[in-house]
Image (cartoon, rainbow, N blue to C red; front, top):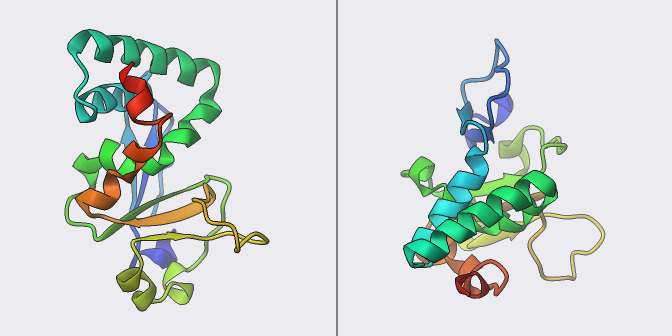
Length: 163
């Protein structure tokens, strides 16, 4: 992570995990507390979708249960992280997500500045480059309101939750 410091700050959101004594300065560990991720996702979704309080409360409880029983469902919300964690993005030009088992190395070595300037969303993968979809392994989004709201066009993440 440290070699990527000129280009990337890594925000790692966790729920009351032990903090390593030595970490690079560009790694930001954010403790969300017990069930914290479900709280952030549930509350922010309710707010962003302008749900009535009753519906938002049901959504929050449902998200809590879903994340506890099937943690892999968190990955479904990766495209919404820009909106869900906007309070941490501030003046960053881009934000992204990756799987924790990825070894990305020295990012400034292989990400070209033009790539970030010219593309709104960049998604890297191997073997299926002709397919158009977001890869969970590593995707980078421009930090702009319209880009951060694209997830709402996905029925299972946006409109269908209003019911």
